[in-house]
Image (cartoon, rainbow, N blue to C red; front, side):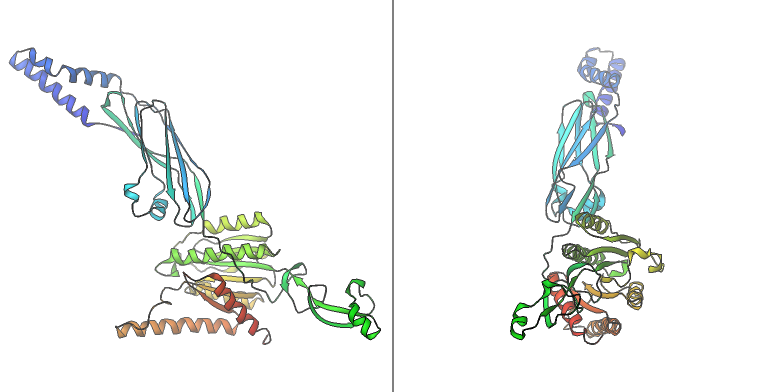
Length: 428
């Protein structure tokens, strides 16, 4: 807190000095009576000027909200002498991303005359995903008699997590490789399951529960039903957070995080183990697991994603082996712009992992080729040709790629992936 004088201090000082000079030079005591109130005010203000330590706490009604929801923020200041003005100022990044166009006129301000406690209730709107710190409050304390004012910024770390809009998915990606655990993914192997395949004569070791009584009654012999079992898998969400994601990198990564949260919810609901690897400026991972607690850990890790400029090479070898189980199903969420991330995809496919790619919101991918400038049209065609070449290279390594842009539902991209992968089942 820093203390400085107010306009009243300057006015009282000037009038006091002028009154004293007039009294001395003119020799008329009546002149001092005209500025006597200001003299008394200056004397009382200087003798009662003091500084008391302040403390501030910030509380939010809910530390987890969805984009578009309102955030109720309560700021409490204690130990404040005199008149207190409290201005709620969240962190610069949160203020820049989460306020509307009228943010400058809607800054929550409270003037409180209570000497020992000041409380302010304000409402902010969450408009950007991520993990934000709301704990910053600007405080101005007017000392008694209004001659001095103390101001400063009090910080109280209050973390707010803004989740992307929930996405209900109908399509579920089925892996080519599964674990020997019951799940929701159809397999081509024979065993106990739901999907009927064929019948055969009953042999040693067959269960009585598998007897097909209709076929047995027609042939006068015992026949058993053969089915495809449903299995679970290990799903690894591979997130691209390199800054080379384009001019609007925050929007592109936001799409990837929205898709990652939707995929995590869908696969965890069918007993799949889901893990996360965020490959970018800061390398982080979450070991595969199941349950609601795993979903919360994945979401927290995704919301903590930040874009950092980093020119170093990122290698998947630094990730512990338990994070990438053998023959796991890797779903990459990337704009396919960074060569380091593309090299990681080829490396995963070469290790025997089942890899699928959701291409999130390209920068020029939606550009219109019908532009008036011939140079711009040629640039767009070259850009699209380069991107198609990357997709073809991935397809040669059995990696399917589906495009997903802002405004389209994620189910459309998932349906495209399902069809591509189904068409290649007979080719593997």
